[in-house]
Every structure is written in structure tokens, then in C-alpha cells.
Length: 299
Image 1 (cartoon, rainbow, N blue to C red):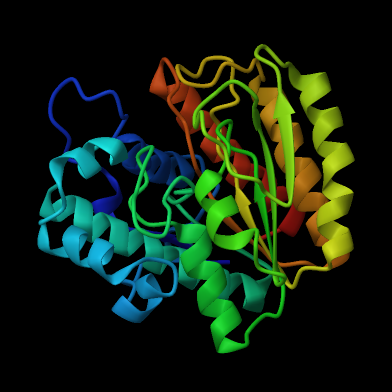
Image 2 (cartoon, rainbow, N blue to C red; image 1 turned 180 degrees about the vertical axis):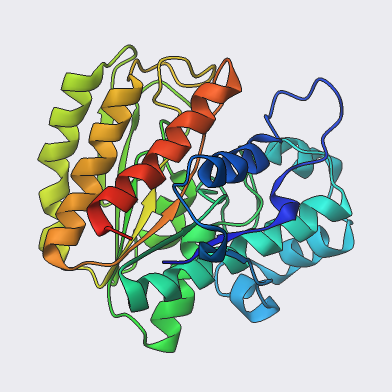
């Protein structure tokens, strides 16, 4: 199995910025130090092409990111100040998503150490998301004829409004979002299946709701699952408002990955949200997702 990463995933943000921009490098070091991944299983993310980006996003928006001409108010909606690093990172994340999806179709499982940018829409970004990796990857493989049907299982604590807007209207895509009812984004779009959870939801109720929702994904008979394995449902998360434990998140990953594996459905993973206090809690949860994947797929 190959997992894709880029040194550009870590963010060079101003001091005091609330986004934990160093977590990606921390995760890569943890995966290697704990022997969850071997060095030869990590591969540099390729850069997405213009054609890749433009299947999901408007040309003027892409140009504004690439050229640095985006309105500062639009960058504030994204949540980062514009920089060349941000533009390069966004393109690498899209390239990593496509590469991981292609790899999953060959080996059954792949992922990247970033992604989950499910708040990005056709002509704007939001919520720390510039471009939408789910839409970019799904549309690349659908256009190439590698797959005919793609399902997104989005378990970030925040609804994937960009996924819903870009992919849910398509008959060849199915979008499941399990998220906090009262959390960001406050204007939600309609997914194929939205499961809204009250503040403070704990492991047992979360896992029950997920188990009830997953049959709709398998009934869709996807050729590929893009799994948003966000760890912000964790009770230590500053932006989460749910109350899952590390054990609950691991059980969540086991449920999704084992059900896909038993059905022979390839999975490509994105790590999604994680804003733990301390951030080490989020990094540990990300690592546990890959640990669970390793146990199920025996790689």
C-alpha cells in the first residue's frame, strides 16, 4: 500500500493562528516511529494539473489562488492568509487525493496525510479548505472511466457542504455525511444522506447512528469509497462539540473499513479535521486510523 504526503502539507502560518498547521508532519513522524508505515510505503504527492482542478472548480477562482489575486475577504472565508505556500499545498493535496484514489483501485486501500477539504465549493473556498479533494478525485476517476460510481463517507464532525453541493446532485456519486447538527457550516447543503447528531454525542450513540447509515452506501454499490476520516468528533477537539473517545474513533474506523473490505470495495482515505487540545490527541487519532487500516488489510 502507498500513502501520499508532501512537505508542503505543513502550513507556515502566522504566530497565534488557530489552525494547527504542524500536525501533518507530526503524523508522518508518528506513523514511521510507531512502525505503522514503512518508509517505502510513503510517496510524494504529485501536483494536480489544471484540468484536474477545473473539473471541480471555476477557472477564475483557480486563477485567483494560483496568481495570488484572490480578494482578501475570500481568503478570510477560507481562513488562511494567501501565500505561494498555500497555493502549492492546495495543488499537492489535490494531486495526492487523485493518486491515492488510483492506488486504492489497484491495491484496495490508500490515502494521503492531508485532505478532507470538504467545505470548498465550485467558486469559493471556506473552513480551511481551498479546493475540494473529494470532488477533484471523484471527477478525475469518473472522467477517466476508472470507476462508474463513487461514494463519499464523510465522518468529519462538520458537514461536508462542498461535497453535497458538488457531488450529491450527480447520479454516479453518493454522499453520506455524519456530523454535528449545530456545528459549522451553519448553512448546510443537502447530501444524499445526512445524519445530524446532537452536541455531546458519545461513542455508543455515534456508532449506532453510523451503523444505521452505512447500508445506504453499500446499496449504492460504489466502485470506490472516498473516506473522510476526520478526528474532530474526539471529545478533546476544540471545534468538535461531540464526545467520542479514542476507542470510539477506532471503532468507527473499524466499522467503515471492515465493511468495505468484506465487500471488496476499495477505499481511499483523507484525514480531515482535527483540532485537539492538545494537538497530540488528534495526531494519535489520525495514526490510529492507519493502524486500524493496517490491521484489516494486513499490509
